Every structure is written in structure tokens, then in C-alpha cells.
Image 1: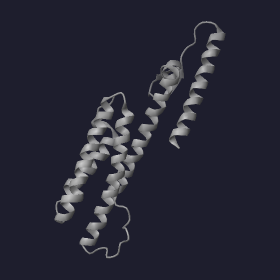
Image 2: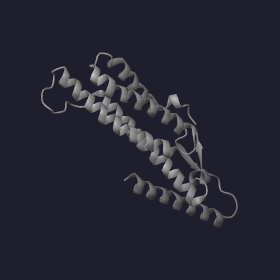
Image 3: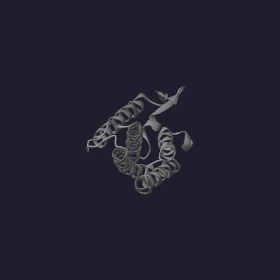
Image 4: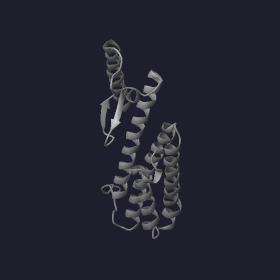
Length: 183
């Protein structure tokens, strides 16, 4: 398990929180005490959820809660940006300006959450179906942790063929489950 402050999701959320603290000191009071304050609280809660997801075995619950916060944070960021543009007189009509770099960061955080959630759902499904992860059962990780090598077979050839067939079936079921849940 990696330390939570080295995770890319944590870094992106923390950078966004620093950006909010750094750049929002000069905003009008009505925006500062409504939108900015809520944004700060949501981002702090999101960072705590990232820590909890990293520390527990049931990661899906915390990741889903963080994804829900990501949606509301994106909406608040967009609303705050439009409100500030109206106040400063840069944008007189209700059209939205092009997405700022804060929204792009939030999109990257949301995409990271989706990837982590898909990975943990596939593992949970595999453990439910087969008792333990089929990848751990039939493969060993070698070298740079990206190259998966089949374990050496022992015993008679019929038994090893059955293992190979089960491994192929397990991987096929995982891919199907990923397609169904990933959308």
C-alpha cells in the first residue's frame, strides 16, 4: 500500500486546495463566505476520503463518496468562476468562459477516481467468484511489476491444463465484468 500523499489523486486534490487558498483572498465577501468556504470544506473532505480509501480494505465506499464530492466541487468551481467574471465586469452575459485550469484538474481527479473504482470493483468481483484473486493464483509478477509471467507448473499435464483453462476463464470473466461496470 502506497503512502497516501504520493498518490496522484491526492496530489491533484491538494494542489487544487492550495490554489483555492492562494488565489481566493481578494474575492468579494458574498462569494468568499459562500462558494469559496464550501469549496475549501469539500476539498478537505475529499482529501480525508482519499486517506481513508488508502487505509482501508473496502475502498469502493470511500472512492464513491469522493466522486460525488468531485461533481459538486466542479459545479461550484464553475459557478464561482462565472460569478467572479460578472463581478469584475469581464463577462456581462451569462455565457460561460472556457474551462479554467482548476476545472481541468478536477476532471483529472474524477478520471483517476473512475480508474481506481473500476480496479477495486474487478478485484472484489474476482474474490467473490473465485475466493481469491485469479491473478495471484496463476501468475507471479516479475521485475518491473508490469510483466506477469505464468507460474511454473507442477504435477501431471492434465492438472496443469485445467489450471490454464481456469486462468483463461477467470481473466475472461474479469474483462466481461469490467466492460459491464465500466460502461
